[in-house]
Image 1: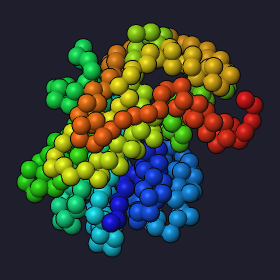
Image 2: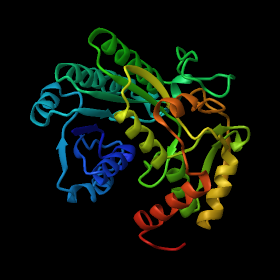
Image 3: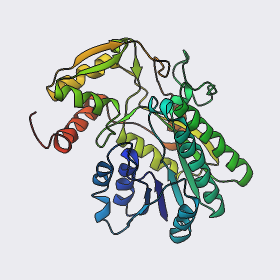
Image 4: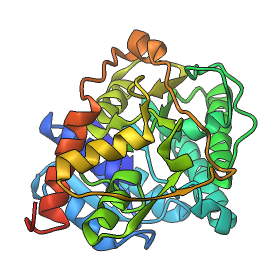
Length: 322
């Protein structure tokens, strides 16, 4: 079997590549190393994978249908994890067109190639952001998702709909996995732990919506997310949408206090109102994932943040002050 990972140099993608390679699988990574954050960081994400004989890196953009067709033709992937996307809720407000082009148009490219090359199993990464602002907790896969709060959320919902259409028309076996606030080593610089840690180290204030009070996120460790994606790649499902979360929301102010205690740095809090792009709570109902995928997250937030801090201390601070 050959596994194709789009966005394979990114946060989740690189961890998935490492996990599959550790099992002895053949892995092809496609990434365009765009400038959303430093491409050098993404290349370091792949340092271990590049040393493995079963790993191939192809630098290509998922919007380039000819380049992607060549990848499918050359490597004939049996399983595809489509993780590539323009990420970031608030950034999507400033640049909605590129989010549509990558997250919708790029996904359509992958779906059509999966159809044409008879891929055995396709996993499409989505997001808890599709649930929007809702008071119904926890979030179940059958809940309404037709009122997204940002262009990012809207494009990911559109990708989900296209995935269903391709399954309906062509029988492409597809699992859509909705990620809930992924964190851990290699986390993107714009994500909460990294962003907060950067400012804490520099003695700069961090912005907390509502001061972090009554604002909850279902922080899910990247290793648990990868286990869920790997299980979805192995599952014999026709079409399903599945939440991958920790099912234990953490109040944001408590999250910051835990990060302070683990790192030894103190946060300077700047409280601001909650913007229109942000729900008050994210909370995954993971019963479906347990039933279909045997999904059981095992990493609590304290352990996960400790691992993140160890990585950050080595990778970003270079082993400096602790």
